[in-house]
Length: 404
Image 1 (spheres, rainbow, N blue to C red):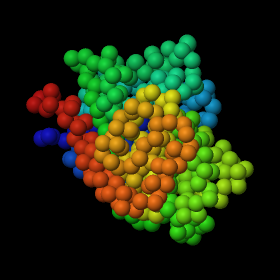
Image 2: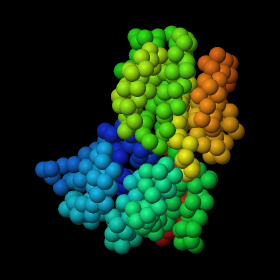
Image 3: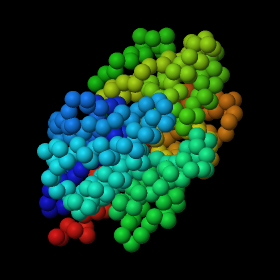
């Protein structure tokens, strides 16, 4: 690329938030800078006294726009806030010093699905190229899990999602199987491609969670990091913990947040499980230090989840050489990836005893874990680097206009 691009990155998540999306977008923005471009991250924030603020985080400009809070535990309140979100952001963006910036490229991250009107307005004004990073195929997954029915609400969300597909020139999905879900949106002017998740490898600088100072000291640790919600179907993981309560050489650690987090923590107390600890989410900079203390990384996706994804936690595990124990639905790209690359064990059923057998294999075979760890690090560097993602996004959009 022979010229610097002005790139708008639009999302609801960016540090200091600790979500996987926030970390990914920070890494992507920093990689754009490293490649010689100028990214401007545009995120909504509840700001009662201002329409906008500008800050610089790690060399990246961040424009925070006043907008309604979208993280309510109420599905209805969250949906209403997200519907108003793009209009509030557009109104306050026009009041900011960035109102007249002429963007070369708009990159936005979904979920949520509601950025379509904002992208459409910016596209009409500046004629930038547009790239949608699509990580959830909503509302399909909510229909699969029974959270919504095939009725007016479902079709409304389908229409909202369709708008962001319409304004995207390229849609980057997580896995090859997602291509089929979006195939009807492919056009000569719109391409659907696989854009793998990514994560920058950071040095271990310690962690506020020190497992050698807990009741799990000296055990082989199975760790779960990230969101614990309905889509994760994590009840089977707590059943796994219960089934291994007699193994005083195995322990479990859950670090994260989500609608199911408190419930599972309460369930631990009611069952008097002494082989598991729950911690609130930690800063992403502490994740390497946490994973240094652990032996196996846990992944759980609800068995009714028919759309495919590669969770950010899986990327973290392989990047830092932690073998994976995953419970997913059969035939997913994640299952194939883990099995083909031999970076862990996968279970696709509902039997706790069968899942327990796989967990014990991983706990008891140190040589197998070492080999999986080495292969995981290699996979992480080859498939999940921020540089590969940034170059793919720019390369997929720029050639048609690069000579202009």
